[in-house]
Amino acid sequence: MITGDIIKDSQTYLMNTYSRQPLVLVKGRGATVYDSDGREYLDFLAGVAVNNLGHCHPRVVVALQKQAQRLMHVSNHFHIEPQVNLAKALVKNSFADKVFFCNSGAEAIEAAIKLARRYSREVLKKDRYEVITCFGSFHGRTYGAVSATAQEKFHQGFEPMVPGFRYVPFNDLKAVEEAVNERTCAILVEPVQGEGGVNIPSAGYLKALREICDKHGLLLMLDEIQTGMGRTGRLFAYDHEGVTPDVMALAKGLGSGMPIGALLATDKAAQGFTPGSHGSTFGGNPLACAAGLASLETLLEDNIIIQNVGALGKHFVTGLETLKSKYPFIKDVRGQGLLIGIELDFDGKEIVTECLKQGFLINCTMNTVLRFIPPLIISVEEIDRLVNALDGIFKKR
Image (cartoon, rainbow, N blue to C red; front, side, top):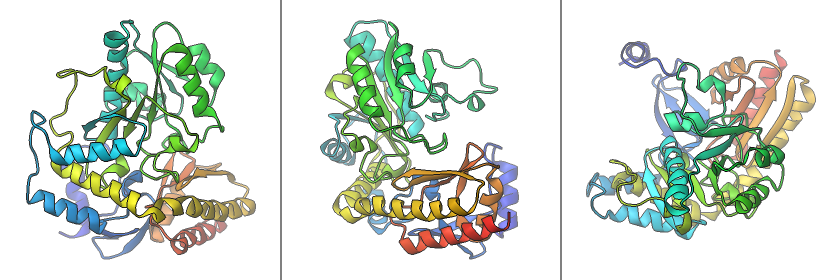
């Protein structure tokens, strides 16, 4: 099919839930993708922080091929070797003692909410159910997850939302303390708000949240769906502050493109789940777990990838700061590792469109923040190409 026909059929047969670019991507290798007309693009979106190892990483592809020939799906009524292997690897390289697998970040958040409430009621024997989350957060689009998301635009038309959430300003510890009451069971927070505009809290924020949770007997639950798997320069963002959460949600980069989510927890918190209390038909299936294990092992064994993220991020930010010094409409440049944003004083959609024309995939969040979340294997040369392209685009304004 030619590009126009594919786009037409897409508009005809798919529900209208996405604002899609007029582009059909058909192939990807490393940080480069190709459209149906053979044009190539440098990918600074990475499937929204999913393709951390780049597109079609050979180790992940081989792992999928081997597993697909052996066993693709079996019920969780049985023990599944690839699932056990991935859980073991995650536990060995994190704070956690136990893992629950699902199929997406939103599902991992749903599981976290259920775990927090059930832990309070069944283990602590206290009728506590409220979860504190932050304005500007994004935790997913399923009902519980979107109710936890403190952005009104995601609620519109879907009210009433799931009750039991209290919203506070991000990076405001006093507001958190004031929000805690006898019904509070957990605090759920992103170490860096991605969809909310690449918002980075003050140093010590997570540590202080840990102290508040300890003081009041709450679970500290981290949403590392976007920040996890090396994105910020550490395997998990909580490592930057040496904080130990009780619960953590993972997805995106865990599967290198395969749908997989995970909820990690300490033994204490994991007591909230018992057989029959939660589950997933496809969660932890052999195929997704094979991709997850290959992805994790590649990040752990090829230390250069994560070690380079910090340096690449600094180089990227330095280039963007140079642009900020030249163009007064750039209000801020901020980021951690390779989760980076430029805040503009105008709607950034036109910049996204112009970048696309010049062969770069980026995105804009919160209307005015250009977000860059490239594969972690991006090169300095590829970063410089984008910065130079942005310079040329900004000059025309």
